[in-house]
Length: 82
Image (cartoon, rainbow, N blue to C red; front, side, top):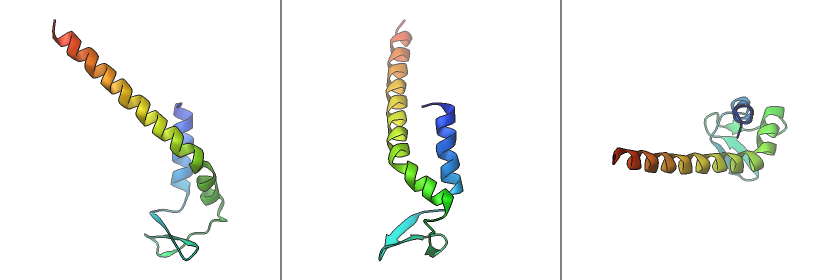
């Protein structure tokens, strides 16, 4: 994931209505604002439209970084034996 990819995801998140978002009776609500979320609002629709790809991309990046951390810890452990 590039720096630009991460910045685009962050921008979409920051521009959408604050959360957490709750769903009830067919309506999305923002818990912090206690009112219905306008899903016709462009930032909200952009956030929703990209979520299906953004979330898997973020999960993949977290897993990549976790694997890298394990690799680096193992390397440090081997080096500390000398």
